[in-house]
Image (cartoon, rainbow, N blue to C red; front, side, top):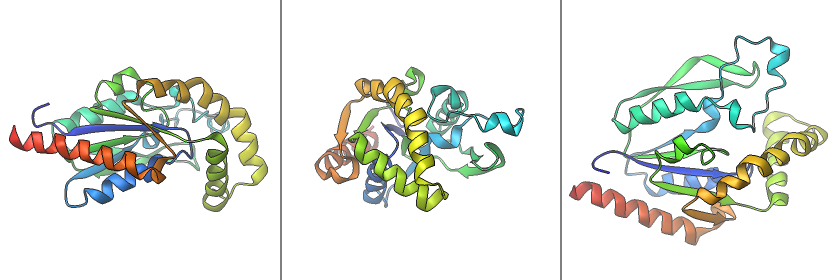
Length: 211
């Protein structure tokens, strides 16, 4: 591995607790350099499509993501080069013209529902995690989030879950669990699993220093 950064992939269904696991790792290593790269920022640019067509975008399908750009950016970070991370405008359903400058760091956490689905992304990872949480917990968390943070109605959340989220989870997200090095039940509440992952990261960082 040499002196290149560590890449940790954290996948799991919507509402599984991926962000809680990520935040726990970042909080522990606050004195070291850790960055989070969310796959959600890398939805494809749809500015060439009429707005009505953009409304039909299935954001839970692998084809919704620009993994080519994501891999390009990860490879730049692996060479300790800064990137211009895209911003996605959910109101316009396309990529914003603005970007965010991201400085390279020693630990890169790549988080997203489908980060383990793409073999090319998996090949860039040193540690692959899957946060495995029961479907009823995931839908309740998603419902609270979408109603409180995105102004959605209960009916619209349920309709989207039944028509898009659940079938995409079963077809693409759940099968990607087999590629994980570690499966974490119940996400951020699983302190034992998080402690083990932190210990593993510490070991790799120490080996980097020795090298």
